[in-house]
Length: 402
Length: 148
Ligand SMILES: [Zn+2]
Image 1 (spheres, rainbow over the protein chains, first blue to last red):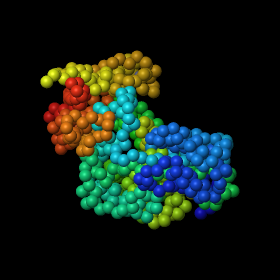
Image 2: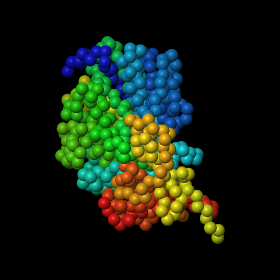
Image 3: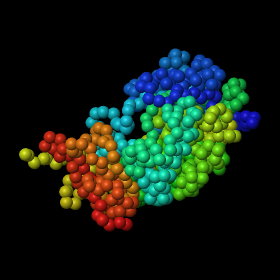
Image 4: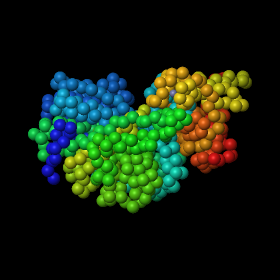
C-alpha cells in the first residue's frame, strides 16, 4: 500500500522503533534506554546527530538521572546540543513524552525527535519511597489501608463480576490468550504458555485476582523516532503515521475509585460525565484521528490485571458494556480474530516498566502495521490504537495508521 | 500493664468518637459538592469558583460498591497489627448523601465471602497498629447485616 502523505503538515511519522528486552536484569536503567534508542535510530536509518529533540519519559525510582531522563539519555548517547524535555505522567509518561515530541514537530520547531523511556524495578509489590510522608496519598494508602496496586485492580474486577457476571474463568482466559500471544515476542519477559487450570491454581493475591493475573514489575526500555512528514518522505517508504495522541485528564466528577485515591469525586452537585475517564481516553484519540473503534485492526491495552483487559474492550469501544466476556470467549480478541487485543502478549507477558511501557505499546503497533511482528502478526493491519491510564489522572492513547 | 493511649493514625480525617465515629470531609458552601479527605484548597467542581469549604461529618453508613482483600502482607509503611499478617478485607463504600465512594479496611473477622456489592456497612474505629503504649486508630467498615 502506498503511503498517503495527504495529511502533510498535520502528521508526524514513526520513523523508527526499538526496545531493550523486558526482564529482571537488575542493571542501570540508562543502559536499557541507550540500547532501545540505538535500535530505534538503526530502524529509522538515521544517526544520533540527526536528532534535534530528545524527549525522556521519567522514572521516579532512580534519583536525579531518572527525574531528568531526557538529559540523562542525551548525555549517555553523547551531548550534541539537542534540545531536551523530561515528562512524568506515571504509566502514561511515555505517551506524554511522545506528545511533547510530536507537538514540537507539528509546531515546525524540529524535524526529528527521539523519545526514550526505561526503568529498573525492585522486587515484589510497588511500594512508596521510604520516609514518613503523611501528606502524600500514595504513602497514606499503604499506611492506613494496606492498599497495594492489586487492591485497586481487584476492586474493579469484583465490580465487573457483580455488574456483568464475569467469572474467574473469564479472567483466567485473558491470561491464557495473552500468554499465547507473547510466546514468539523476543522482547517479552515471559514466553511461556499457561492453561486455565494453572491460572486458577495460582495463589489468590487480592480476591478475585490471582498471582498469574496481576502484572509484574519489570526492567526494560523502549524508544521511538518521530519525524515530520517532510523529513520522513525523504527517509522512508513504509511510513506509520501518528494520527492522534490523547493525553486527556478526567472530567469532574470522576466517580470510579482510582489508584491511589481514598475516595472518588462527589456526584452530589453535578452528575457524573456521560463518558467515564477510561472511555474518554480513546474517545480523544478517535476524535482527533477521525476514525472509530470499528476501523481498528488491533489494540494494545494496559492489562495491569486480566480483568482490566475486559474493561478496556468496552472502554475503547470494541463492544458495549457487559459484552467483553462474549468478545473474549468468541475469540474476537485473539490473533486471527476480528480485532486482536494485545498481540504483543501485553503486560501479562512483559510486566510493567513504567516509563517505557506506553512507548513499548507504540513499538508493537508499529511493527504490526509494517507487517514485521513475526510469530504474532495481525494480518493486513492498517489501524492500531494503544490505551493506558496513568496514576493521578493521566490518560494515554496513541492512534497509528499506515 | 499500662493502658494504651489512643491516637488517630492520621490527623483530621475522622472524629475520635468511638460510639458514633464519622469521617470528616469538606462541603462547598457555593455548590454543595463534597470531598474526602478534607484536603482540597478550593472547590474541585470546575463550574464553581467557591473557596469556602466547610468541614463536615460524612454519613456513617453506606453501601458496598466493591471489595477485595489483602492475602499477602502489604509493604511498609503498612504496619502489621499483630505477630503475623492475617488477611483482611478492604471495601469501597458508596455514601449516597455525599455521592462519594470511600475506601476502608473491613473489620477483622469479616472475609470477602461475607461481603456482596450493595451490602450496607457502617463506620467504626479500630486498631491500625500498636506501637509501644500508643494505639494508632483508623476507620473501618462493618457490615450491618442489611443490604440495599
Ligand atoms: Zn463548589
